[in-house]
Length: 213
Image (cartoon, rainbow, N blue to C red; front, top):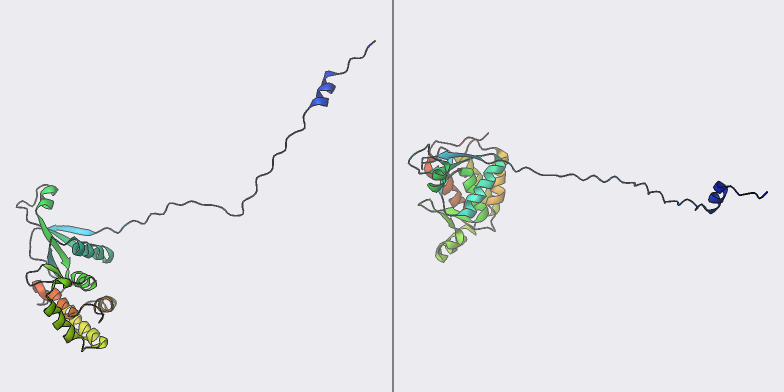
């Protein structure tokens, strides 16, 4: 009798060896992806239908985006309220009409002064924003000769006295910051005069003092 080999045994003889896969390396560091978004601080803005600014504010006519944007950003940073001035004949009309009839802004006078000093502007007698480079050469030369005789300490002292006189409640921190950034001797001269012009116009220096919180 012939013996027939078991099929299972034969199958085992031709079975392929199991494939081995390398183990994934264990990471020593955990990767975390986060979406970080910094929300921009809101600008406090209101509509005004009066060209005369409220106490402590200065009217800036439209027409100089660099200056008004600088004032807006500083107001946004420090939490000051900005008034959009519109001459629309009807206060309750659609917002589009208010934008069409917008003629300027009421900014805090201390903000206007700071931007004037930092960016080289001053306010003309008519209230227009003018760059220092638009002055006549004889005016600039006269200002340079007058200011060259003053030391930085003298300029700072005069600036502090002038600001404190107009803004008696201004915090010391804000006062020092304005003097530090706005009254460098190497910058454009006659800044103290320009600051006084800005701060004293529109009744700011006549007893109607802005409040500092």
